Image 1 (cartoon, rainbow, N blue to C red):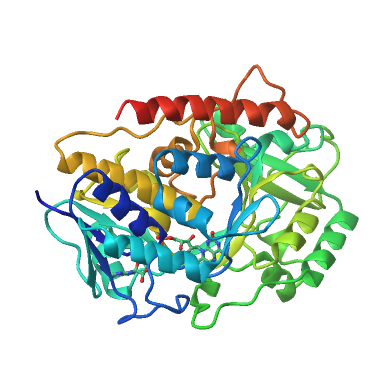
Image 2: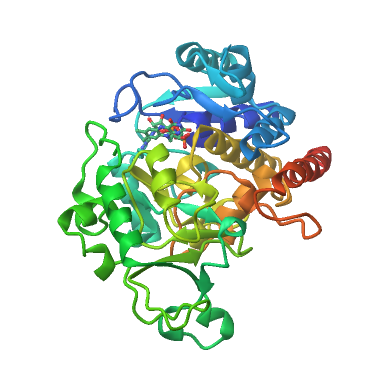
Length: 445
Ligand SMILES: Cc1cc2nc3c(=O)[nH]c(=O)nc-3n(C[C@H](O)[C@H](O)[C@H](O)COP(=O)(O)OP(=O)(O)OC[C@H]3O[C@@H](n4cnc5c(N)ncnc54)[C@H](O)[C@@H]3O)c2cc1C
């Protein structure tokens, strides 16, 4: 049988290889480390965790990432099995002994007769076969060049400059209002495409003070900051002058406060819809290097966002990722070259768990293909399905930025109470629905 080739033995590639071998299909797993290094990896092991040692919450009732753990365990996932084996005490989080974990993943893959680990960098995309590209946020420059050659230069980003994303039902609409600048757009939906949060002068000054004082993260060694010109963090804009933001992303022109039409705002923060469901909004132009704790405090100073729940916070990182909503089909295949599947962080998911989950899915899809079958993605009521649906079409392609799994990606339950108070009942309902639908999807394979 023709093997499936996987480029990259990180979290995604390792899980994909395991799933394919479990289906009885041979795999060649190409890994460039340790011959070619990245600035973040320290070893030649498979599935090295480059920064924190946490797979985040293991609560599969109240937390979307915990639900994703559950789904991966149900599918016999290697990453979860080895994480469970090398678990460290960490309250409700799944933290692991990173060295023992990566060594165990590596050994298990080496011991599997259907898997061949082939050392060395793959510099060019192949023309034919059944391939998975799982080269992660630090995809080698030569392969990135080859991907760009196939997809176009704008289709593979090298940095993510992420603006924070807010759960729509936590925005206080008695303060904020819907309106596009100058009411632009043909339809009413377009004329109301943005949510606007007004600030008076005192609020603006206090916000600038907080931005300037907030704790910031440093760049990793080896990470360049050359993107700064195109995409300044808001705190750097504020450092350039107290008025800079008011003439940039916070300019108040072309907007009328629907609650107080006579009052002219001194500055306005705009949020733009981030998914087709309308459950997530990003804060326009608010990429930042502030630390996470500081971000929550500073952004909740924005009138209307005082109770905001964040689906993800902002950041700026070295990160290679595809514009997946335009490039990948729902089988995770590259539209212009369907012999190539993509998996892991390079598809625009964010985090160890999400990357491994996309490896699991791409692996099963590629394995099914090798066996002459077709595997559809899980329903988007499941954590895995919600995530793959987001990257392959649910997300806005123009503003696409890497995404963690979160309940904002799940189809809403209209009969349940919204807002922060409703979570107690809503989240268990989401995860129960996910478990039922995921089990049915697995059973049908
Ligand atoms: C500095 C940094 C810190 C991070 N911190 C966290 C964190 O704390 N928590 C978290 O959840 N996520 C974190 N992430 C994101 C993290 O990288 C991903 O969550 C996860 O590792 C992605 O899994 P992956 O399999 O897609 O990529 P990786 O795990 O990076 O695996 C990709 C593999 O492909 C190999 N490769 C690349 N190019 C080639 C090539 N041409 N040929 C052969 N092999 C190749 C690489 O050597 C690597 O082994 C961080 C990322 C970075 C860059």
